[in-house]
Structures are given as structure tokens and as C-alpha cells.
Length: 89
Ligand SMILES: [Zn+2]
Image (cartoon, rainbow, N blue to C red; front, side):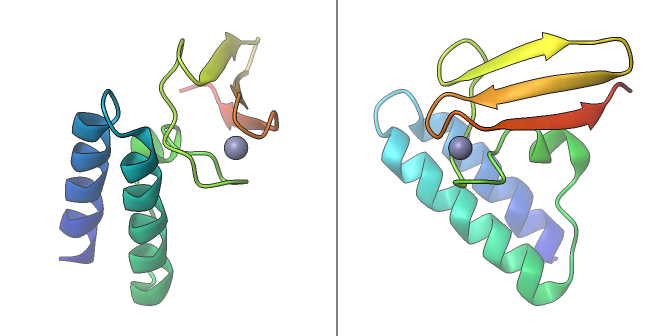
């Protein structure tokens, strides 16, 4: 149930991003809080759409830069300029 709410919040974040990117960030913060409170992990594919440093909703090419390395993906958040690494699927 918590997981469904998280997925819904990410969908809302995606919808709002074009016009209200600040709302998207708010949805991400909420999703993260729900995950922490209910001990539910945010699915990997969604996790890559958020910045773990500043909770921004990330859109590659807009406010995030994605680079493929040999074994992992580097995502740079252009809001706080920090990087995240994910194993290459
Ligand atoms: Zn960030």
C-alpha cells in the first residue's frame, strides 16, 4: 500500500514537472517520508529519478546529467551538483 502511494507520488511529480517543478520536489519528499515511515524501499527505477542529497525530482537532460560507465550509471543532480552512482542493470 505504501509502495502504491510512493509510485503515485512519482507519477504526480512527473506530471507536474513541466509547469511546477517545485511541486515535483515536494512529491518526492513525501514519497521518501512514506518510505521511511513504513519501512518500504523506493523501487530502484524510481530512486534513480530522485536526488538522494536534496530530494529533487530528476529529469535527465533537464536537471540531471546521466553518464554510463562500465559497471554503473552516474547521475549528477544539477540542483545541488552532487553525484549518485547506481550499478548498471
Ligand atoms: Zn540534488
